[in-house]
Image (cartoon, rainbow, N blue to C red; front, side, top):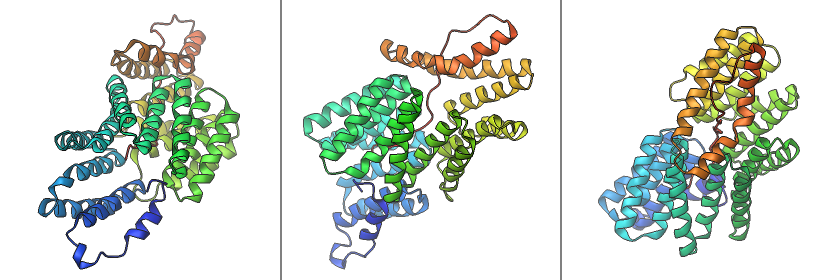
Length: 390
């Protein structure tokens, strides 16, 4: 599991335990580990079954492991995109950890809450939670948790627009995984570094990191990180006007989602496909796809504002200025709500630093209309979350 080899972990856990261990803590941990592996593989029905079996054993024989079960329940909910339930479960795990004086469970609870807060666009809260988790992990010498927290802070930094810090955290996480004997984990941070280089418009470095991450993910049968790497490779190809390569990568990403897709991740692939359709002048297909994404129930604010901005650009290209202007405004208002939620001044400035890449589209549109800029620049938050604390 620590190396990201979830299929191998499940194979090792498949044999039944001897009757003497049927009600033991070993039986509980076996089911919880199966739940975690199934969750990361997107096999949510099997994960739920394993969790329910663990919870029955805990209720009858091992109440001291209730916090571990709450943590796995949060992970399962997070993987399914149910962020509110994930947060409740992680809080429950954190409360139990404090009651028991279990510092390792407390670290996991804080780290998982920090990651969930980013997905919920509660940026200040996430910053505080991750810092607290990292302090505890350093004090406890919990090397594996240090790597994961560093990586999650890297993603948070990217979301906030602090790309240099994002790379520093990603590199620290990858180095920590190598040092503590978990080389498979570095796939996630390689892929994340590819995202950061893409945001920096350093497409050569982005392609190198993403391709390396994809190769490693495929060797370990890591579907999650393979999909994220393919998405980034598709974006890079799209930016370079290499449309055939972009099509291959995004189709591959969509095809790997399987029968239990992760909702926001699949929407991200669909958004890339819609942007590709627009770039290749398939305007009707692009418009239809973007409208579907905007109307999608449960889509994150970040997905929606990027889809709105893409739709606005499409309508601007087609001469529908009034419609495009309305869509640009909707997108900007959505982003402004996220900006307004940030109280930390440095984080707010970092968040605004991403504005140029996104807001240029609106400025260019207004220039073509000879209209004044009516709203201060703001930012677009990356939609991707390619890791969960546990």
